[in-house]
Image (cartoon, rainbow, N blue to C red; front, side, top):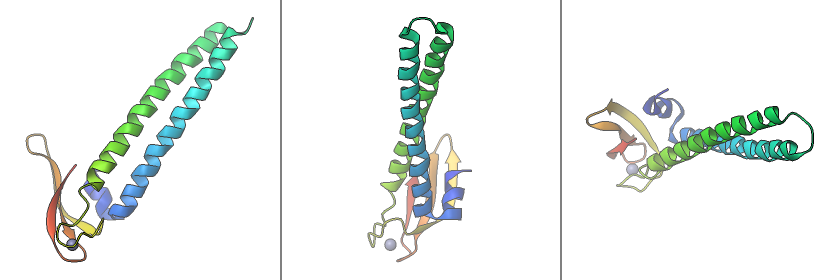
Length: 127
Ligand SMILES: [Zn+2]
């Protein structure tokens, strides 16, 4: 779902909370990948055992860990980028706005026009 539609449906604060939860779930996946890598390396170094299987486990865990790290950084950076623009310029209310319209254009960029629920101030949020 596109960001403006998701914010329109849930509200900014719920959307932001959800983005942080999803982002941090990727951090947990990264930590599990690191634990898997260390476990597989220890099993790889042990005498006997399936060295090819443990080597494959390390490679797969590295790939999953790198993907999780990339996704974690992307989600948190994007959420913070939008959250830094979520303060009304007139009344300084944080996150109390509704999406009026949005545009996603390669030439002009992606943005949404928002309206403050407290003072009806309007501004643009890039995403
Ligand atoms: Zn306002």
